[in-house]
Structures are given as structure tokens and as C-alpha cells.
Length: 308
View 1 (cartoon, rainbow, N blue to C red):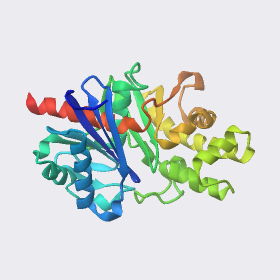
View 2 (cartoon, rainbow, N blue to C red):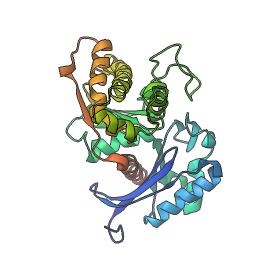
View 3 (spheres, rainbow, N blue to C red):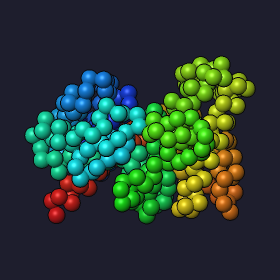
View 4 (cartoon, rainbow, N blue to C red):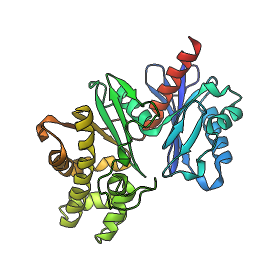
């Protein structure tokens, strides 16, 4: 369905390898979607121009939402630092995109990528029936978004939900954030691929999943180990917020059926006062659309705030 003639918002989800974008109606119906390579090595100015071009193609005339991984200065529209997208650290991304679209910067809403994915799932996906849940995205890194009473919690500095940087192994591998032993170094798609290669398995996780589904012992063990580490990290959220529902998304989230036994084991190993039966681990239903749909929702909410 074309966005022409339909009231809609545009959302953009920036990742390490791709820029996903789309148009969604005010009721949450997907009208159109696009994806292009991120090509971050071409520089931040070029990136801003291509994001604006996508938004324009999708009928963006009065604002958009933008999901980006990392620590953000939302008011200034700047990515302070991103563990996996250092090319845009310190860059005034919002101003640049707004300039290309001839819009006021206030009409470009910047939010963390996992937060927008969580908002997308809360609005139109797996979290619609659960007012409280933790969204976890397994991709280049591990993102997280906390939803309480139907609202995404960002915290006073915007760092709430950054589960990828919970320390699981204090003396573990060096993370892109500069610290050691983060969950991201063990359970992201990037980390799982490296662990697979070290175990003599293919680097392609789809192939690993297929092997495990076919009964390959090494692949099953690998995904069990990755899931266990993920569960150990998620246990921190249960202790702090008593969350019982987890929504797992991102590209590597497709392996959830194979990761689930390990996740449950890791949760029960580290969580306080709960058993596996107390938790619900759900697969995200919006797939790669979750981020840009949530970004569009952020853009809609921000526009309403600005118009009030």
C-alpha cells in the first residue's frame, strides 16, 4: 500500500549494516518499507543525506522518527557515542537530516534503536498484551528497551535498558564500549558468529541454526551456551525491576527456539526467588520492521508534544 493520500508517519532505523525505513499509518498499519546499505565509511554527511532521501521517498513532509544505537543527546540531536557506529560519534545527525529535508530540527525525533524497537512491539507487536516487558535485540550488538505500564523508560540520561553492557564476565572480552565482559561480547549476533567459528562451525548463524535444528551436537551446544549467557544477563533486569516478560528480536532473534533452553537455564541460575515458569520469553513479531515502526511512533508522539 502506498502512503500517498493516507495520514502517516515515517520512521528510520539505523543499524551497522543497513538503514531500514518505512511509512506507517496513524493506526500502526505498514504502508511501505525500504532498506538500503548503511555504508558508514562514506561519512556522516553522506549518511544524513541518504536518510533524508529515504524519508522523502516515503512521503515525509512534516517530520520523522530516527532510531540509532548508542548513547544520545536527544535535545541536541547528537549521537554521543555508539559502540558499533563510531563513524557518527559526536555528529549532529538530527540537524543534518533536518537540513536536507528543509524541516525544523524539532521535527526529527532521535531515540535509541532498542527503545524504538520496544515501542514498536508495544504498539503493534508482541508486547501489545503486556504493559511491562524488556525488549532485547540481538544484532550487531545487544540492545534493550524497558517498557513499564506501556511506556518506554529512558532514564534521566537515556541509558535505561542498555542490557548489552551488563557485565557478565568481569575479565572477559573487550567490548566496543571499551569495557570488558559485556553481555554484547557473548550474545550478540557478532559474538555468536565468532563463537561458532571458534567451535569449528560456520560463521553464518542461519547455517548454525539449521545444523542445530538438524540435531548437530556442536551447534546445539553453542546455542545453548550463548542462550545461557543471555539469560544470565537478563537476570539482572529481573532482580532490579521484577520483569517477567522478555521480547527477543533482532536478526539473531530468529534463533530463539534454539536459544530458549539456555536462556531459561541462565535466568534460573542468576535470578532471585523465581523459577523458569515465572517468565515468558516471546519472539518479536514485527521482525526487522520493529525499529522503524517504533521510530515512526516516537516521531508521532514528539510531533503531538510540539503541537500542544
